[in-house]
Amino acid sequence: MTDMHQDANYGIPAPSDIKLFLTDVDGTLTDGGMYYGTDGTEFKKFNTRDGMGLQLLQRTGVKVGIVTSENVAINVNRARKLGLDYLKQGARDGGKLAAAHEICEEMGITMHDVAYIGDDVNCYDLLSAVGWAACPADACDKVKNIPGILVLDRRGGDACVREWIDKILARQ
Image 1 (cartoon, rainbow, N blue to C red):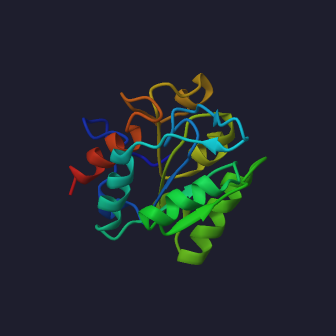
Image 2 (cartoon, rainbow, N blue to C red; image 1 turned 90 degrees about the vertical axis):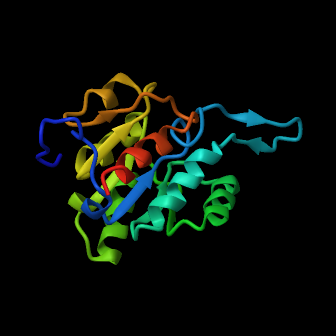
Image 3 (spheres, helix red, strand yellow; image 1 turned 45 degrees about the vertical axis):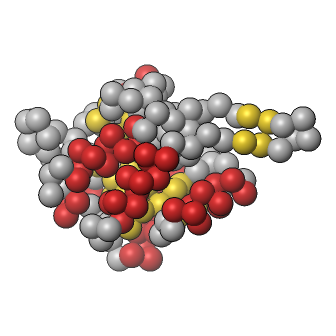
């Protein structure tokens, strides 16, 4: 993690501090629930405030994207609707970190320039590698105990991504 000042803004970058903001989906952009219709159709509930936050951050010049273990059309639809810069799906078994490295290489940046929010053990490696890490209030304990991570007040699916983005935007 980045050396950060021990003050009220600990764990909160300014938009100019980051070049790329990434988020997990299940348990972060959603409440982690898996909803299935009788025909097997999968549903997820996204919080519109998170979507607006991602778009607001994009307007400052920060690239935004999703890195997720899942590989489902719902995530493609959500990323497309929001106009996100990146969507990396199917990132399993250390694949989230590898996916972030791919994006960094493409952008010509380092992991120090990346902010990521995730909630579970499959996010651990990426959260530990980025310059700025945050997690929802209901993240697993292993994630909450990452040195320097910002544990947010809101739970996954309850606009926790927006909570962090609002804190970032307040530092402009």
